[in-house]
Length: 258
Image 1 (tube, helix red, strand yellow):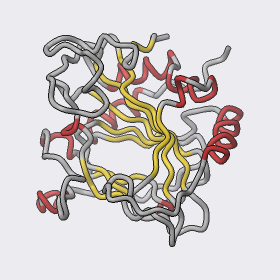
Image 2 (image 1 turned 30 degrees about the vertical axis):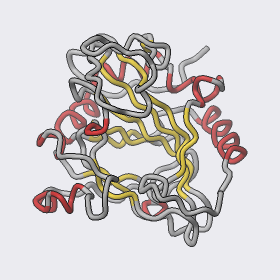
Image 3 (image 1 turned 135 degrees about the vertical axis):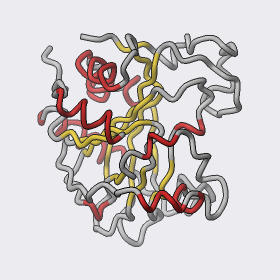
């Protein structure tokens, strides 16, 4: 089977290393994207309910599709994508999958608003921040539908604390100096286009002002040598992981490289 993911160029890897994020057009091939988009539309179930969770007010999630659907598994377990991830995380000979999500941002008047600017890493019970997220559009996604934007080079400043915990805790509210950094341009993503960002890159998204849902698929890789710290985290609390040992568990498989 032909790998549906293209190899990132050296110039793209260099840009990512410098800026902490990357726009990767046509990362995944068209035929697969058409199937994923069709399945995403079938899975989309707007609830009409307002959640007390700040994350749930920003977007909906359907987790773990790569484990149960061969089409969603293709980009996530792609050997070429694993190679790309290892190149983007220098010194990482093997990568593990942390999570994969179908992400839905409802249109104007729905349940979802803006995704406040935040870092991913402060939530994770991991001893290092060597991880990245691939965020891929499944439908035509203009910037004002909620494509991601990034504070350029914000990954250089280390962990800046958790967001989505209390009112007013967006990263830019906790750290107003982030406003001195350049904000990435608004991106119009076509199906199969992706952005990739480090777990320390401050990112967020506008509300979806269109009449159709924003459908995207995202997955996260991390350094297979990462150790578990034991910090409370819903995804890992009951898995029997051992503190100061690697994430040797079926929920965090090593993704074979090309």
